[in-house]
Length: 387
Image 1 (spheres, rainbow, N blue to C red):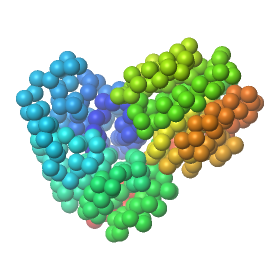
Image 2: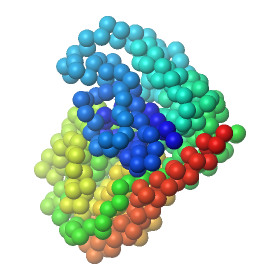
Image 3: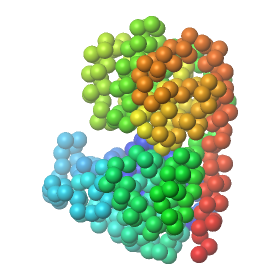
Image 4: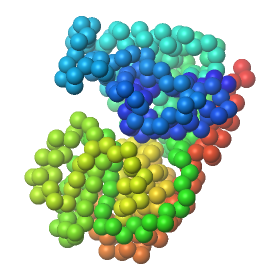
């Protein structure tokens, strides 16, 4: 069977990219698998892609419209000027595609129209809507929602509900999101398949280093501003503990300014993206998820697979379906900064409880190991392809 994945940018480091690479790597031993990337932000991808998986770039551009070979502040494309005009298409409500670039649109359309058979999996609302309109019906068209329906604004949600009935299937990450789609959509095949992570052996690390890790795109969704506010309380009582926030994004400068204004320069580091996240997690005592909203965060599953207890806002969606409060981690009311600080302090002061939660977290993570998730995708694709 031929399986194609279409990503916004396969060269980045986000959870959607990591999820799709894991899926492609797991399926390529038995199937013809391809990952297509609309944009290209570097010469090589950040995640290791199996050599049996084809990686193709539809354009040679960064998402801002410049060529990936241009200097960081340079742009040699004349056609970038079209981005000054409003996007006239239905997918404009997806924030990644607000700016119109006809060269990019044409590249996506050609790729979708060129599909001849097998399964085409698109991975964000704009691409899902374009596939619904442009991909030939002889191809099985699957939309993956890596966030959740309730998190989308009114315009985007309306566009989704108008376009998705043309697709063959929509997959979601959580039971909560499955219920939301079942209520909003009729006549569309819906399936819940969680993110998958590579299997790991039980960690032998003691997790007694006084360090807490967070990771994700440095953007408002991830709530690192709230985490810094909570850390001001934690650091005042435990100055020997360190918080490390891995990731990159548009919010970096603002977070650094907030950290310094709170007097946390000595206890908070923002070192950027790391290619050794598993090692960094294994060398820490706790993981904190401070997001305002999520899908099913990959980094949450990865932290638990490294034997770390997790303190997380009970945001929509994902954490509440993975974390059993007080067993394998702690759930905190959404956006409650004081409760987040108090819960972190509680676990800092309870090393034995931290270790017990970490062991339970690892056992929970086994449900998401890639062999099991791969089997779910195999069964799902097999149910769709006999047409």
